Image 1 (tube, helix red, strand yellow):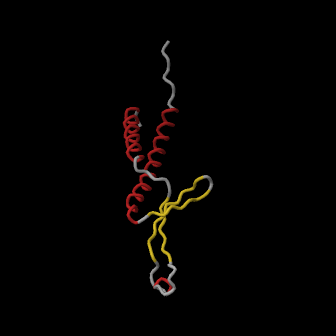
Image 2 (tube, one colour):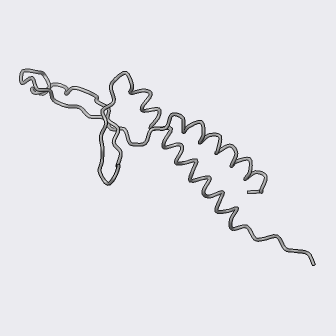
Image 3 (cartoon, helix red, strand yellow):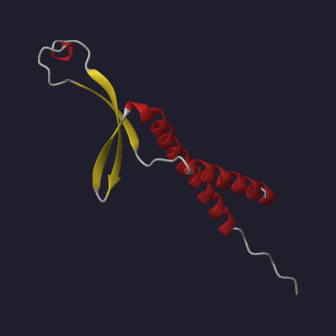
Length: 111
């Protein structure tokens, strides 16, 4: 990729990272369905379980931490988790551009 196109792409990626970083949430979203504590409930007798319940799981200090996401926050949290994934994609592409730039041959000096 020509130098000027690399510079333009780098600028685009940095703008995208800055925008996404404002809403990014680290972790993975998981959805669970559960049985309740009421033995007479349909969920104990072949009926559908309760849910979905959304959790964000993230590995911190060598341990996985699950955080419950209340219904009112689900859309915003899921958007943040997706933004985190997009930030990672942008950073990988930036790293590739940085590597390509670092590996360019030095310009030859004229005597």
